[in-house]
Image 1 (tube, one colour):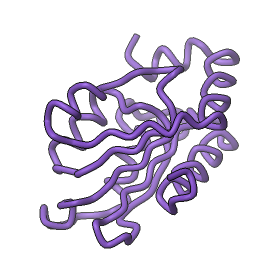
Image 2 (cartoon, one colour):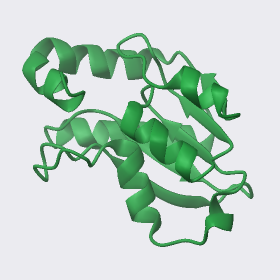
Image 3 (cartoon, one colour):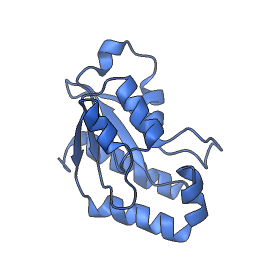
Image 4 (cartoon, helix red, strand yellow):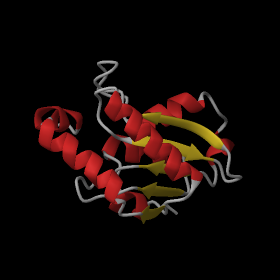
Length: 148
């Protein structure tokens, strides 16, 4: 699954976020038919926004879609989704969440599973390295991002 287009796009977005000085988390929403609906990265610092996490950015960039567009969709994200992003995945009834890693942060994976959403952890070393570096270099920014 690390070779999946959705994961590769999410990883590109995470790298982009890092080069912009933001939190290196990326996401990509793929339709059941394999089409990219939206992609994005965490823009908390770039846009001075408390809510533009990667998954939210991907949904925002998908634009206004009918509820049926999300049926069977997969949200690829480079990190375990926080409660806000977990809620968005539940609200739009995505079928599956594929995350890059959950060693640096564990979000709402249990809740996703309880709501019938498949969760796949790719345990990506690159995703873990991106986050570990950010957390080490900017711990206060990281804790701000996760509401601590």
